Length: 430
Ligand code: AMO
Image (cartoon, rainbow, N blue to C red; front, side, top):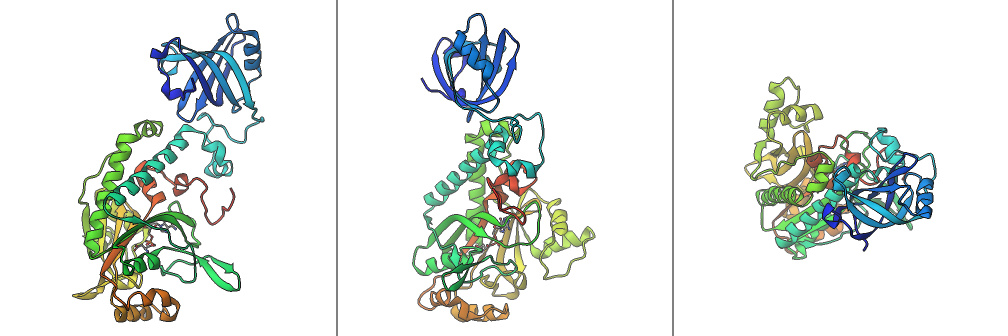
């Protein structure tokens, strides 16, 4: 019977199994060959003593090369000295496809490679269990997010990625030619998710790519990211912050329960956070940074060095609220009592921003003046603005970067580790 290595245990002693996978390691001692077979779930030792192995099987084993793809039929034998307490005594080995030598990258953990080399040969890099683990956990993260939002009444939507306008000030757009018009890759589903509030959905979410033409090359920026966006009517920023913190706790809990094996491959023990997270105001954050020697003016965005100082004083997860209106995009709702600040928030993990969101301006005239005050032309926002004139409910929402979330959860030092084929300033291939 076809099995994954993880489905076999010493209790299967005597059972016939068929395994498919890659040759991870070969130890040829002349009269005895040990082969380590790797499949997507783990490893199995295949043992071939010359005396008792069929001649043609032994001959095939002698020809095996690392990373070739094979089928192995054999019998399970309980063997306390073998990894996981069993070995396979093969009756049949078929080389399905032979790997060339030398390998572009080592799959065993013995020879560490630079991140750039790893990303150049990403398919080989992804064969390493530690790296596979990141993406098996990523799958669970996305699954949990879909489950959580769906069970809370959110409808999954897909909005266009080829668009005609910018949404987020401060980041450049990637232009592209769209027949005879100029178009761009979307920076955020912001305008569309807001328009869907005017359409009456009340609660929507989208999991999709966003494109940011950021010039800078850092360990926490990519030019293409998967963003989880929500938008929700009849609630303010506080309502969507609660959804966000509950979602984070649920995702951590699910990963902890369902991905123990992959956490072990990564050598990690996950600490599941508890909601509510701390909320500190922008002013309080500024005070912390200033008290530690950071020179920073009121109204400025918080620099990386300031955020490192602030993060060192707080729990892993915390919100920064009450941002200066000038530091946030045009759609953020100014605080009615003090319009210099707005009802927007960032969710932080240590010094890294995981998500940002806000209560939105839902009144047409206020929105027009906000656009103008940011130097934007209302003419470029026609379809968006129309939705505010015929019954737009009050609403709020946020955007959460999946790669940033994985970085935080799995303690990854570089955001590129959380993307299968990352896009950055210098990387367009593979
Ligand atoms: P913002 O621009 O803060 O907000 O983006 C939301 C989240 O997306 C992720 N993110 C990135 N991750 C890696 N590299 C990047 N270059 C990058 N850019 C963004 C981050 C960030 O917190 N429209 C608003 C959201 C809203 O208000 O609903 C927006 O896009 O995790």
